[in-house]
Amino acid sequence: MKTASSFVDFVYVKDVIAVCYWLMENQPASAIYNLGTGRARSFNDLVKATFAGLDMPPNIEFIDMPEDIRDKYQYYAEANMDKLKNAGYN
Image (cartoon, rainbow, N blue to C red):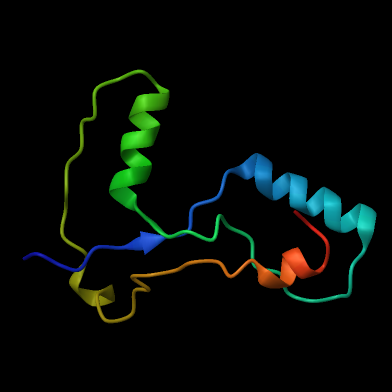
């Protein structure tokens, strides 16, 4: 069974650490800040980039989304970075 594609805003762990450090040093207003690239990408893009980073040819196998979570899964997520940018982070 073919299911909808997922698009998620992936973010590099070192970028998360950099933002956490900036928040600690600059202490903007207490709030919940989104963190991402501001651009949703597919898992397929992530996997292809991972293989490219490892200098390996892509070896991708697709499996169906488990039926019991299909109607609960968030198929699209993209970080709105405006609040963090308005707090002074670039």
